[in-house]
Length: 328
Image 1 (cartoon, rainbow, N blue to C red):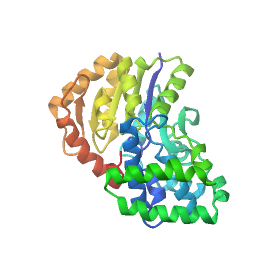
Image 2 (image 1 turned 30 degrees about the horizontal axis):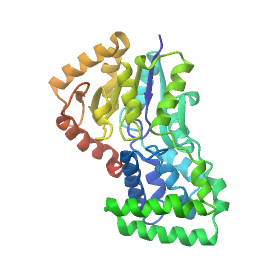
Image 3 (image 1 turned 180 degrees about the vertical axis):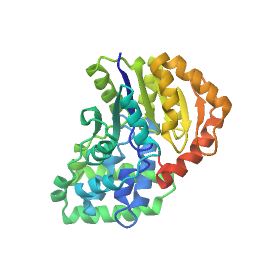
């Protein structure tokens, strides 16, 4: 049977957050994104019907249009994006070892296809968010411009106040914006996050006739928790890498490290002995402990207390991903 592994892109394979970096291309855009990203967390945690984690990528569309950000800007960031330490080596090792390597990411297609191409992941094995950004620019009129400029000022004023963020952005995104020409552009973007990641994984599973019990998935954040949970529940191997508190509770095991290629021995064990062998190796590595910022493994299946795992993940995540590490 084929050995299949699926990575999230941002975090496991590149430390960058493309949407965050795009918003930073205009003044105060990074701060605006941080507030909208927090709003994304709040909607996900409340279980808003029809909303998926990662829909941030739809919510920021009007602001990208307002500031003239283009598809070429997205592709340019992809060409300059750093790769996570050991990512290229790990993907090469997996492919040479007979693994089928996949990537399911919330990221815009112009970014995902360029970064995964650099890593040698086949285009047919990628699921990401289609994003016809350039076609949206003609929708912007003078009235919409004034509305968005005013909203930017209000977003910057409410930073850090969850109640105010929820109240203000609920009104803007679900009542005011849909009445504008740009409102339809947001509706056209359907980010691949949450349940949509699970649906993409199931499509890959069916295409290659490999059940989820035989898959390895690697994720790190709130957009991945459903994918991690479903694979772990099915008996597959769900790995949280430099993860936050939204992902860790749903994984089989975790690794906090500046090098994702530290996973190679565990994946080799999985290839020959399945999940049981991988978990046995993780237990041994956890007892041995990590060294500096490498090799901090934790077995998570059935574990109720995660404090000892959260600590190294928090520190190394911020080290590797810098500002993007604080996002959900």
